[in-house]
Length: 386
Ligand code: PHB
Image (cartoon, rainbow, N blue to C red; front, side, top):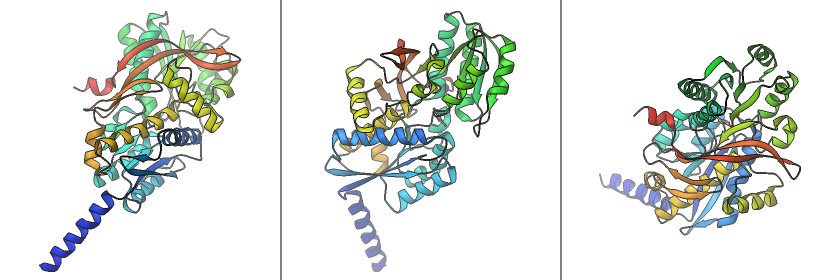
């Protein structure tokens, strides 16, 4: 009996010591290689910039950012999450470049009671898979429904949708399509293209015969260049078919590589490097100076993920207890480079402005120029389930 009490006391001492150790490890899991490597590159740069700007010390603790490459494979994400929690005693997990990767870590976050901050993946239901998931990116319903309203109000009546065939694409298809039909529009055809080695050409060739007013597209960040190239090669732009979508297709990391075929594309999203605010101007200048490339919405998701972690550690006065950090994250509010943001305490999703943007040339460079704001948009998927 006595020895059991001693063991318990020793275990408590170790647990307490690790909870109050000087270092706080943040385990960041990203696709640094493979088809979504641009997401990894942008997210890493965003998180590192936040630490460089705010200092590595918060509430007396030193932040240690451990970045791990899951190559975009869910089994690797899961193993890395396990190792970061069990071996490195990570106080929070951050990143997750694709929906299946965010889902793979969810049971580990739940079991270990460690916050999983999803700063990239965007299928609406992700936050329902663990009470420890908090999101700083966006959701596809949040970006897609406003696109439908804008399109219908601006003379677009018939649309073909083309999406990548997995979680976020299916969300985009559903929320654009249902909103557009409710507004009075017609969906002529809803096309899904595989995530692996996508070839849009055969689909786009057929779309021309449908003669829609516009094609609505979702492809994940990093895949926009191939879609845009094939859109133009198949002559859809010359046929007068407008290109609309969520901002993933004209993502700031790829826009220069896509070039003039992107001109005129109208998209809805939560972040553009051209966002006109003092916070964003300072962010873009510092980011480009540190990295030599332009930030996209993934960089901002990670920058804000770190902002949320700093906020939570300040609130707990440096304690790394998972449930306490989670409580501090719920309802957190701050001004991001994208505009004002808030973590919805009920859904743990981010409430944010959605902007309508058009690709335009400014000083010889392409930008998503914002021209309309829909303020404080909550994820409509969760709102619809109430
Ligand atoms: C996702 O897999 O959830 C995802 C990835 C890239 C995006 C959007 C969503 O641009």
